[in-house]
Image 1 (tube, helix red, strand yellow):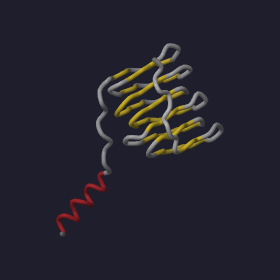
Image 2 (cartoon, rainbow, N blue to C red):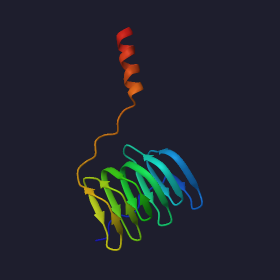
Image 3 (spheres, one colour):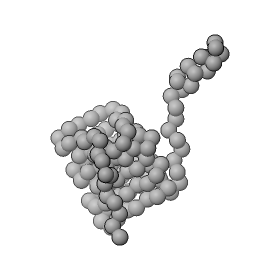
Image 4 (cartoon, rainbow, N blue to C red):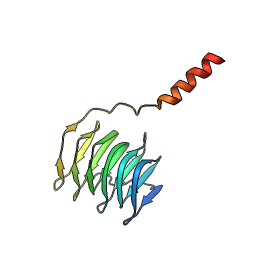
Length: 134
């Protein structure tokens, strides 16, 4: 049985020839066909890395679907699905991982649920200060 390869609704598309450097944060589903370097972050969102995408980033998302090139670590709270002709150089971590035949993977694989993303320390301190004064 073939697994579902893409989400029902892609809310954002980064097309071929587009380059982003820095932190890319999103909700829902994003498809990347261009180049990204830095961080890709979404608490529960899905990232689809297309066949022509080149990603050099730390990825921390709900679900990752990889068909392109990733140099960096991938952490997913729900699952990671990897399809040919994907090339991953870096560690992957998710409670459910599927890697199909024909994929290049060089790294460590851990099938535990990643820790939740850290809340900004400044936001926590602001909340504490508000409670003290109130």
